[in-house]
Length: 365
Ligand code: UDP
Image 1: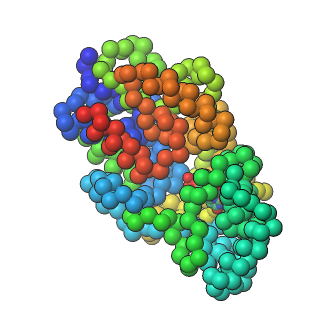
Image 2: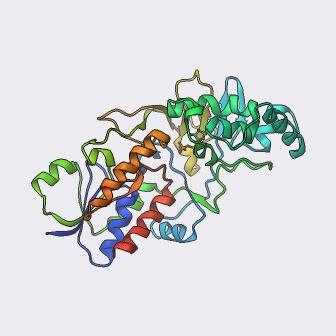
């Protein structure tokens, strides 16, 4: 054995694990099939702007330990995510708050907003919400659901809201104050200089091999390491032998525009089902950029098929059940640890990935 750990995937989970293991003298090799490190937090400079190549990543957490941890590797700016939603020719603030309700119904006070929502909600007679549609209707009523949630969710997940779990919409704040902050977390920001630099620092001193496919590599090097930390797709690892888990993938249409400010905000969601993309990201606004040009990405969500990059696990009932069976198989693999969004088939945010990796590494070492 040459290494203590073979780490498959150089995203946040793998990089944090490698960093901590290396720190206490463990020999680690990180491999990644891609030609760059950092997985889906990878950023690339275009026209002097850090472009989030695999979709917008806004760091937010309420865990002070995680915040202190990540701040060792970058300084964060004071960006607060406040997306707007465009529905046909109407524009609303997100998340769902008094600015949204006031624009939607021409009202001014929380009491007026609550009265309207209560009236709309009572028409549905929903008990404990059983799916995303019931959850959204019972939180926000019919108008908000129809204009801001239904079409967007259907585009993003490719499934009707009645087939999706309610927790997906509970990620978003819903509040009766004039507050457009998309997150309730205590800490938030974008790392100055981008995320790739964080991962570079995490992997400082660790052996890294890019353009390296795990399945090819392990055939030739079966005894390379004592243990493996695997952050790829868990069903692929087991040769899909129990069936395939479903994922959503995202395609980006990125464009450089000859103007300095295209949409006035980093994130604009298109919540109407008829518009084919879910959102447009204007990357410079994450870092308050004043470059002459701008770079935008239109985001199209589709079902994952082999050969594509998986982004989101589809945590509905069917897939959750299938995952639990793969998890049983995983638990029998004593020398392999599964981690991250794909290894654990979990809709993790970045802070939760770091938390999970730190937890795991402390158990391991
Ligand atoms: N969502 C919505 N309308 C919006 C934004 C979000 O209905 O304008 C719903 C949608 O179901 C989405 C979920 O809220 O999947 C979570 O959104 P979030 O922005 O957290 O998704 P992510 O940034 O992870 O893609």
